[in-house]
Image (cartoon, rainbow, N blue to C red; front, top):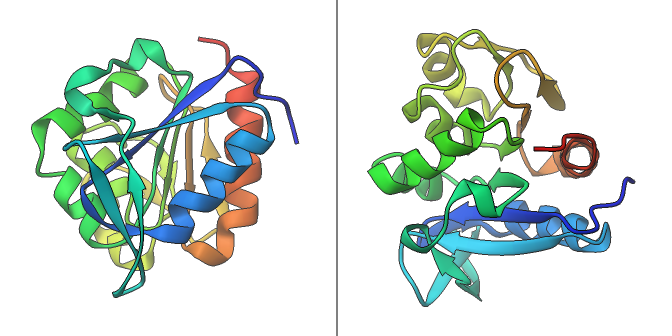
Length: 186
């Protein structure tokens, strides 16, 4: 795996509904590669993660979306879970924050239902992505080419988009996240 020394990665989540493993495994991959993960949410305090539909652990928020800008980071991770990205896509601040990464050419990694926020940000048109299968129609309606693959890294637009389908894809997702952030200098 590549090194992320001096790289800071934002993890954008809602106050609850995050699929825990889709937060913790990429977080650990970033930290293990020498990067600094930062938990960003729409509210301060703690966020509630889930193991599918069951409550899991809570995690302290480092910064709220109102306190940060994309310029402070080298990449963005959008974990899944159904409720988490559904909440984020209805929050204009979260959508604008995610869009600002793409606009500035910084890598964005989204897993499972995470691409919903990218659909709302209108940054998937003409791009190839994957996701949880139920987002296929949403992504296609937003102009993306949806494929059923373990991980997709699309370099065709302003910023690299890294997407995966579900927790089973996390090893490939984490490797693609670290490798992409390590090679893209913004």
